[in-house]
Image (tube, rainbow over all chains, first blue to last red):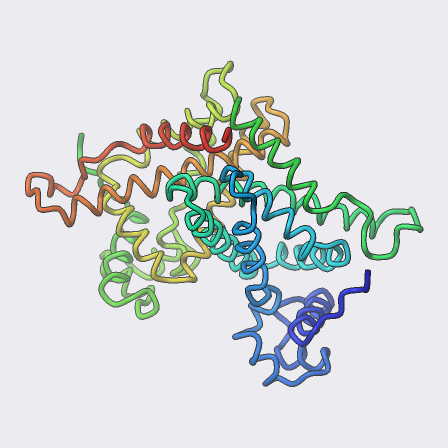
Length: 204
Length: 204
């Protein structure tokens, strides 16, 4: 598999992440991010409304998630439909070559309340998108809302575990794993396991 | 039951809510909030670090939640323990005389991204507090984290329904329900019902 080649928004995100790590989110300007990415300030603003948005993508994740829900087998129940969509994300978005970036990004977010708050809101928006996509498949709205929230929970658990593996790899002594792609379990299988744990806890 | 008599932080919150409704969150200053409450700016800052915090209380909810978890019957499973704590909140915090205030507060939050983000972060903090309280009761940490997140979901569903009843009452034509206290189901029973729905959806 070819290494992920970021386009302009991806280069801006990568440059921003480097700078936020080096000097902190507060001490980094949009101009510095653009310069580091070899782009201009006006290019930055073509893709992102402000500095705060640069680590939050441009809606690709929502599109993939909604498509994943729409393409689940028609007979799948609401929560299995969400699990199918999370499998899709594991193959298309949360791929091994993005794991290290995702782990570093989360560490930057965790260090900044403003970014954490933005993250929390983005997750709420993704949950609403999931519920709407389930409703379009015929799931009754109250069930769709609960299933989407359970799906968001499964996602969050799997995501935390997925990025934790990247951190282990970076700090590990095992030198044949230092490719930056991580050797831990993929996002999809982690999501399946998280779903099992959620079901077990709910049934207790 | 006596009508809820707000103390200084409660008066500041009530004054802030009035002003945010009248002229918007952005167009309201801390000085105006203090004046409307009949208090001084320095009193405001004794209780809240900034304007953004005034509708988020001062941690009482977290304390009640943690106590509710600690006081659940020892034999209760993790999710039933959380349900017990939500019952406690329904009796002590989300009481009928606070319903209208809570509904108005949520409408103000929903109209302002900055406040919504703060709300999302507060909910995350409450979820962590729940998980920690469950762990102190002997629930294994991974199960405690999942149970706390399921509990947060139950809470959110029940809360949305609880405040929706207040709105219905305000706009309803039935004049003998205009006491401002609402006549809908209490928070505790709504939480029990939401837990049943979450369990059913998880099992599907």
